[in-house]
Length: 127
Image (tube, rainbow, N blue to C red; front, side, top):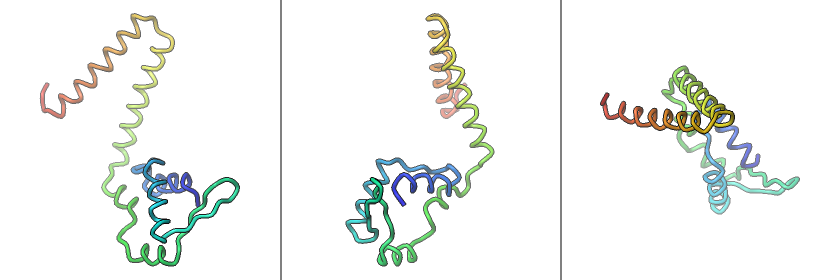
């Protein structure tokens, strides 16, 4: 399995709660290879990784898979609502930005900046 496939697999197994970045995955793979826990081979221009015997033994001794912990206790319905709201907001903002006049874009930017401030006020328990 190559690094990108691992990123996708972790995201899928965690139900989208955890999608590691390439900047964290590839250095980790290099470290695991340096420690003899995985081996790599290049095939079709891609670097494929597999567990060594030592790596398999270490995995068997380890705790729960990290994607199980990452998705434990997640309110999937609320997460879906948050994503829908966030994507909807950005879609509307993008439409105004692409098709609106300068005055409309300025107003849209003011709305976004005001919304950000109001969200932080919620955390501060202020009105």
